[in-house]
Length: 523
Ligand SMILES: Cc1cc2nc3c(=O)[nH]c(=O)nc-3n(C[C@H](O)[C@H](O)[C@H](O)COP(=O)(O)OP(=O)(O)OC[C@H]3O[C@@H](n4cnc5c(N)ncnc54)[C@H](O)[C@@H]3O)c2cc1C
Ligand code: SF4
Image 1 (spheres, rainbow, N blue to C red):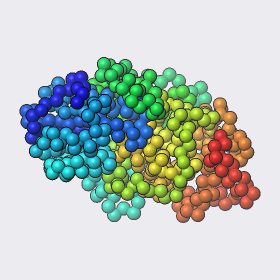
Image 2: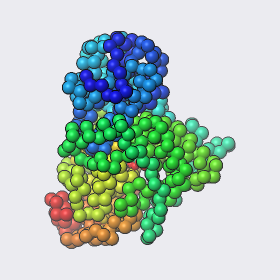
Image 3: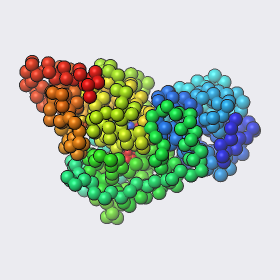
Image 4: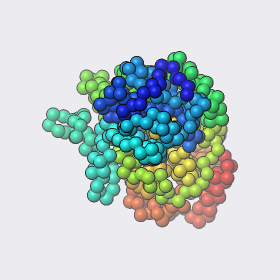
């Protein structure tokens, strides 16, 4: 078995083996409670299957592997024994379940302990491996989150429909975040979202303070060629890899964000600009999802900036809502709805995902830019994910599971508990309205309003028919026509459905024909 630098392997039979997955890189996690440096040990494994069960991009795989190796080295520095299987170990069984089975047979620990994992598939694999050898497995609450799955289930229980906003208010109250001394929301309002939806001025976003970057150190320099060689045909590029991969990097990235960009986060949260992937966003999702950062410290740092007068309330409220609202909410949805959730396909969509989602080679300027930054950096900001790549897939009618496999593959922050509800629920409406009250359906005019992409695009966002009609606009009307009856029952879609009823039979036919041509690859 190969040795990863800084990681030792002990042959002593551990009393307790603590399983640590690639997104559980927190030495204070509940899985470590009661850890005994002498009698206990840690188990970690890099396996091909985590990069191949979806066609994981090079940046995503590199992010997990280098963060895991740094974490294993940090554990060892604390005196902990780490049984670590490296990806290129000749004996590597190449799936988490299979590798664990091999190691359990060899190490025979008395018990297995872990913090609850972030993916149903992985949980099943670990349970199976443990029960096959009859070793008890204790799964502990993931205390990284502010809301337990049980608490979320209690919140959801008895509600006819779930809405993030009510959950968010409950979280604000329960945790006393951005609240006044007499229990009211700071600034007299729960939500300043209306102030966070502006486009940039015509001259662009101006000078945005640069994001924190972390040039590859020795460990990362070992991982990048390994990923490049082993996953040569996988999507994405590694030449600009500069993500925070350790706890101290993550803290530095948080400080830089709060000091330099948080104040500008609010206004243009939904705005897009070609060639500007980072803008005023935090770029902290991967650090939080891998557990290098705790959301409580992120939220506390943002709230302190507001209280010290360093950032305005709409920016801080908007930022905190994403974390204690959306982030916790999607996790609750995932664990209360799985395993059936991944199968949902409320709009009966079965088209294939266009091949160019994996290359960015399309004349559509907005899609080319959003996919380009995704492949270059393993990152695109929320509106690019929701209102460009997600919107296009929904309007096209792509099979939701294929859309899910793309999102899980391409982003450095992609872990199923957060990716799946965002993709299947929020962006594809495949859960029929559990996550959001209506589909995020829009024409190219929305993209034209929020960005200058259309100015350099061969298509016209206003047109819905004709060879230069914007594919978003054509597909939007086609989407409404295809789902007219189902959507008519949704009061929040009434206006959009009414507009459809005004289209005469001849134009309906032309829209359907142009949409079919788009589906056949005419753009
Ligand atoms: C189709 C689709 C797929 C997505 N897949 C993922 C994913 O795999 N992993 C992931 O972390 N986020 C995902 N998101 C949510 C969101 O787009 C990213 O969290 C965000 O873009 C990360 O960039 P940032 O750190 O700069 O975020 P910012 O815009 O700076 O927001 C701050 C933080 O809020 C949290 N956040 C914001 N929006 C959401 C949300 N909708 N759900 C959960 N947390 C949120 C993130 O932790 C983020 O770091 C997805 C969204 C969509 C529409
Ligand atoms: S015209 Fe349509 S495809 Fe082109 S950039 Fe605008 S929204 Fe995108």
